[in-house]
Amino acid sequence: MREKYEEELRHLNTSIITMGKMIEVAIESSILALMSNDAESADSIIKADDSIDEKEREIEQHCIKLLLQQQPMATDLRFITAALKMVTDMERIGDHAGDVADLLKKMCAVNVNGQDVLGKYINSQLNEMGSAIQIMIKDSIRAYINRDIDLAKRIISSDDVVDELYHTIKRELIWQIQNKTALGEQIADYLLIAKYFERIGDHATNIAEWVIFAMTGDLK
Image 1 (tube, one colour):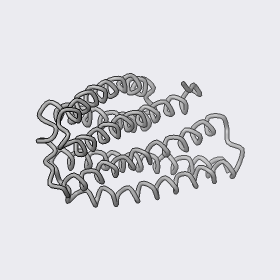
Image 2 (tube, one colour):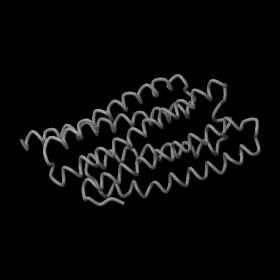
Image 3 (cartoon, helix red, strand yellow):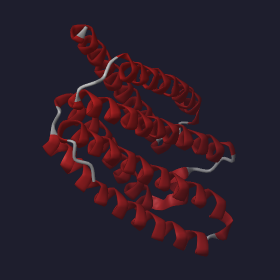
Image 4 (cartoon, one colour):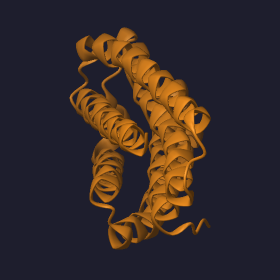
């Protein structure tokens, strides 16, 4: 009986890793599309979010099944609890990848060139922020796969960098809105994208915190 249960836990582990890879691809694709003004890729990114949602439901059902099958040991209970929490954060990351793609379609539909609106400085800051959250997501999945507590702690610390980039972009874009009213709506869209990036960083941080909980039982 225990052997079968452990097999189910391994299957759950594989499913979480698969979902992690799905959100990595979603974020990478949305950032690449944004930076290259590639509205044609937006629909496929939005469609991919449906697959991520489906994977979340599958994992949640699996977790509930494991909890009901037999009384899990303390370590198993921590792992299953962490899995339920992590997939919620992963699903939200997928949602935000779709949100960015939606905004990109909107901006391209009105023939706005993102780089012209932002200027080189802000475009560089947004690109840096995108790179930072991609690293956080990849590292959070790697921390989970390798059960790497030290890496998880570094991810949590790196969220401060993403937050600072967000506030830098926010200050500059608000200044642009105040001084370039003709572009106010478009600049506001980029401010929203920066906010989505900041939230993605928060969700990656949450994943790292749940990795630590799964291993130690400690939760901030």
